[in-house]
Length: 358
Image (cartoon, rainbow, N blue to C red; front, side, top):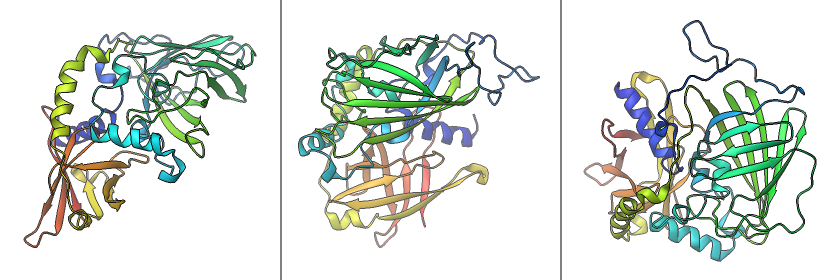
């Protein structure tokens, strides 16, 4: 694997570590049937999207979902004043403990799987069935029925859908309030309504916009954009979080014990823009560090599209953790001025990624 590929793999892992599973977990390598292929045998992902016999787009397939850091913070476009204090406090506590004892390890993931994971969609004229790695499923009814006025709360909710041209609009209610919106732990009430808008742009790509509405907790709707990529020549494999809970809890407990208080004047030194260029000059991206309410945030990871804001939790005056324990540190010159951000590699075969202060 080249250094560029390793850097990209590490960055991708950093982004997708907050999701429940990834395509890397798949292993069967079963050729996908009835899809157009190029002369070298690869699936032509830019071919036209398939359609059902009635002319509607066919959304069937296994899909890799990429919501960026909305999977960690679905409410990142809202200000703290637009979130009920108890809900904001629960999110902050969960971030600072690095998501120790994730409820989704013992209960179905619920609406978190509306925006993340690797779902397999099976479409018929009357309904869509969505299968998830954690052995949960959804039924999205397309037969014209209305949402129930007072649904019995369930982990995956009650969903109905209708077509607006080539876009499938899905509305869901009745989600059990024990579930979470994201891996950062944003809560919701059982009055929440979710609206999903699916548009398959070609064979290999689908755009999804998910809107969470819960006025009892959030002053305005939260809109999450999700990019979906077709997974081919593979099959779904189960992923059960609680199977790894013992090791996960040990790792996160150790990380949270390292948290330190750092003076604001020290944190303020790191504010600014840092530039990272992929090996070979393929892509240059600016990473922004900001300070608000005594905390550092980092936005837009190199090589990753979309909003990528996250909170940085201090482990020392120069070293921080992000994404539930992923480490990074700042290097400084003789005067203490920051020079670089070093995103530390945590997996075998990967290397540190360095962004230089501009």
